Image (cartoon, rainbow, N blue to C red):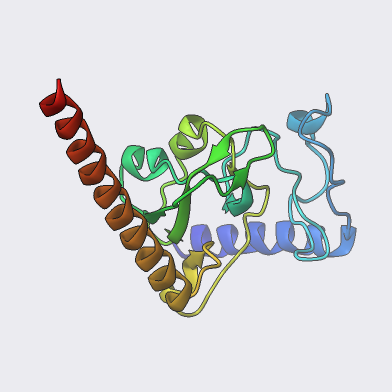
Length: 194
């Protein structure tokens, strides 16, 4: 029984020493290269972070939002199975601009946070986005010591700006209501005069 222990230890050491003295490393090939899955020689260790494994084009990694193209439709937050996307919008009093594909923007993104600690990288949020402003990047090696650092904030509005936009909306709705009442009163006068 002792012979089997020593024999297995010696076989392991021999294999380790062979790898150490060969000092050959695997060539980094693209995932689309014909030899990618058939590389049988050399070690499979790469010298990270100097070398990185190539990532496939359809890979699912970190989320990124182009907030200038976002119409704050909330579809990504509704479809997310783990509720890692938080969105709060403030309605604008008029059109506030256009996205890169020509869609009109009518909502301000008061809050647009993605908690990547919760994200399961399913990609559903990228599929339902009508303006394609939320995408999955090829970054996969973000690591943090504190979990709260994985909360990405994409909204650029300050709390003061949000409050100002809310007050503008309230004033606009108040003026609209007064105009409606005045119009109804004029309509009544016209109907009474007939």
